[in-house]
Picture (cartoon, rainbow, N blue to C red):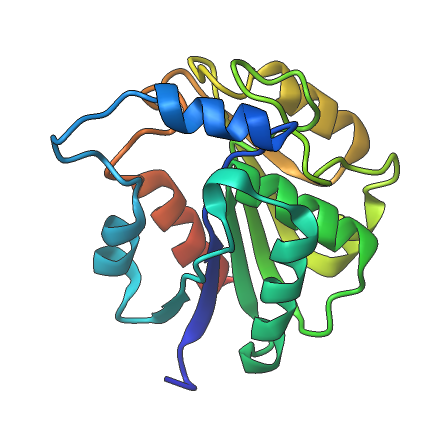
Length: 206
């Protein structure tokens, strides 16, 4: 596996202002026994497993996330990472990577970072962005940490407004911002060929 480029994928999650709010969510959330789309994770495995080693840590308490907990667990993976790694953060995982890479010099060389539908601030739809995931004003270290930086949004996102793309763009002048017309809301998709193509191109230009 050492000859393969690593991809570390940080999943999304939810945050709540209080334990009471979290318990209310558990008591009122919609229940379904039908199979749900779990994002494009399996698709990425099928499309990229020949040349890439995909690492998918299960971050602590995904439905009641705290940045401090995620930071500890994320840092435990760093000794196992190699230079030339690709980082992918989805939703809350995206702002987690944005915050971490804007506050810490990463000890390994990052080929590319993909932030997929990352919230920028607490102006999300139907959810509160709390738990320590707030960004500081200066994000420039993200661009210094990563050779390539992509931020990916959808106009029909019903959780993270597309206006967050502009907010990131004002802070990150070198980032490539990609906005799709539709990705079935908050990237509720089982296939994501565009990001597969971009990752493969990153490897060619490595």
